[in-house]
Length: 74
Image 1 (cartoon, helix red, strand yellow):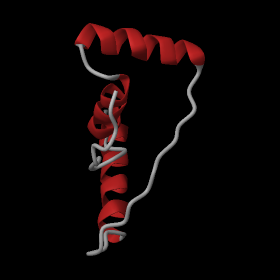
Image 2 (tube, rainbow, N blue to C red):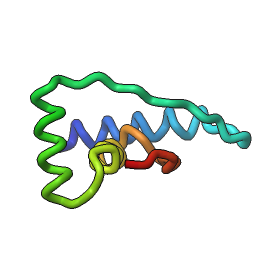
Image 3 (cartoon, rainbow, N blue to C red):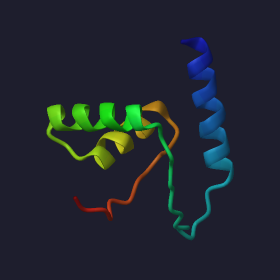
Image 4 (tube, rainbow, N blue to C red):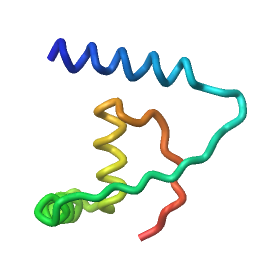
């Protein structure tokens, strides 16, 4: 747990250091294992949300991403 908190502090400091006033847009593409894709699909269906939304929530909660612009539709 302490290691995860330390990791979040490092990630947050990098984000703060590289923030600019002008908003930069980047697209993230990830490749995942088919078994993980199936599991995420089942979990998303159970939670009644899209798989993209589930992945966004996981990445945000883990501290990997800070903000996501919602421009996807399912």
